[in-house]
Image (cartoon, rainbow, N blue to C red; front, side, top):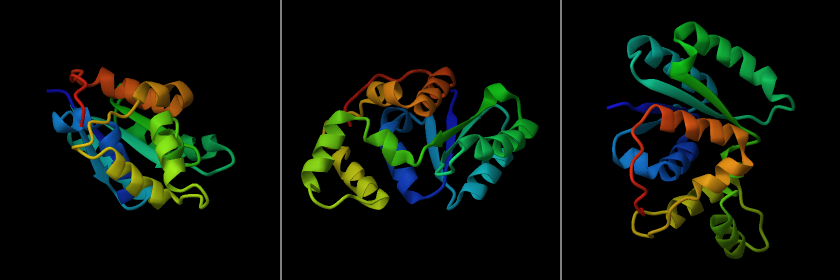
Length: 172
């Protein structure tokens, strides 16, 4: 079976992406790997490309830099030395992954209703997201809406579709 390993910076990103791609995770087609920091995510992706060339890898990083290309170019250079460009992807969430999540209008409305006066932190959003899309909620993340509003997420979702057999979209 084809699979994709997603290397992320920390636990919040791990929780969020495990829920966003839950249908793939359940089938073992996507594995989200928490790496503690950006440099570790890049290093582990590089190692994975060298050790397991059959497994596609994606590095998903938050990027608050004013010019994301200043961040992208060196990371792509590292990954490019480790494997062919069709086996890896760098997706930058500007400024962070919560921007992607808030593109799901149902989730964003629920989050806003739960915290009407206090702006939520990234951790608040991650925890709320984890609970909102828990395994028993029956809710499905609206990946199409997220793709429509976020080019980097669309690239990530397309990369996953390309390197896996598309699972059926079952709630959970």
